[in-house]
Image (cartoon, rainbow over all chains, first blue to last red; front, side, top):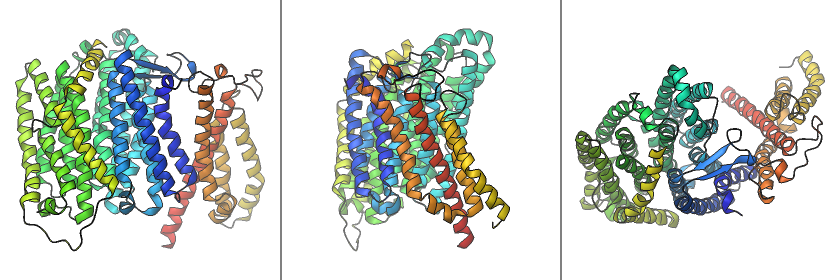
Length: 493
Length: 146
């Protein structure tokens, strides 16, 4: 009985748990932590079940209230969505395990319970965006995600976090606004909000109202690239991800930025057929923006002295990779993009979490003062190094696999230039990650007045993520085997 | 804000606003309006109260934790109504199919789950408006005194 309701339950479980936490109020911190953890465990199980189900049936549809589309609201989980739901829920669980024992030291006691609730609401919105097949529903979840993400940035309450949060909120709302305008335009000319029906009605609507559709494509592109922080529109990201609490940064960088790319993929493949896309200059635009993003993100990261800011700029470059695959638009390149969504989620989460640990243990934020830290605190620094090596794309680790597929995709499209870009960017990545790794392990051992111990949850999460990096690098056939039919499904429309 | 006229008028008009708000919530499924509009109207009565009598006495009437609980309870209530249909073997938020009594169209107690859902939305919107307003007021007071 329960399996047929999984698509709805996956959204409801975190939502209800968040409101139960809020119902009890800020004094029940332990209860909030346990509820959040339990909700995430249930969520992860559900998401993995859905993932299995998509491998058998292909696409799962769920109609709210039993109303058939186009009247009712539909949840639509294809392989691509199932993949993303599994990533969101498992990373969410790992970050929550990490948060236990660390979070209380980073934010005020009074807001810890609310933080858990906000975190679950953010997860709800991410899952909802991915699973929904209804444009207006997607917009509502987009709004929930921008508001809750901005709150998760500003939760520290210090001046920098506040400023970053407000900046993020404004730009993100601007992005939602233009997505809303695009949705309104599409609804106006097709008369549907359901993606499947829009795709059917679009060719006729395009013959009659071409300008509305061109405008909505442009608005979608701008709106979603602002929210996903593609290069020239990335200005909010380094501040927001750099000054947020550790767990927020990890989720914001690892998951939130990706969900907008998932929405973009939905628009690209589900609404606008591929031959339709070729009429408009979307691909060239994406290619230019992502090329600059990959290079400039890395170059700007080299100049940073603050470790979290550096990681944030690295996210700008990695978002460029994912959009590069969508710009090249060959099956292999799209597989590369999807793989990079997974791999970057793992790598960036481990990097942000271990950097957060290092900052908490040593009090050092500056990159060049990390000398010898790895000798005193081997676990977080080893986790950081593993993440950094994977980010550069050293072969047995997972970062290499997605870069490999992106490169293959670029070659399929007869555009070897982008392979060069990926290579150059990998060298640039090495330029800012490797000195930290080398200095921290081979530098002079520093003297700390006291040696602190990491909570067990933090150690568990870092280890699990490190294992995931190696496993998804060595057994890359696992995700690739799942993604090949997924991408086929996307290209089939 | 010690204006006698404002206080007398407010005391006179607040019950009417509240009844009207409740009316819009309860008749949400048969006439224009619904949970959101009705909840806002209900909240506006309390905002008027704060303007006439000050935030302190409003806090006594509706403590913050009550407002917060109503807010979360509204959301949980909404989802709970939706979940009823799962146990009846249909999909989330199903109405007639889940066995909610439909009643006679046009009557107040009709339309099954919609009636209850509107009520849940009304609760949530009402208390959210109040909490937002009191938070803004608090900020101002803090800045004024500190």
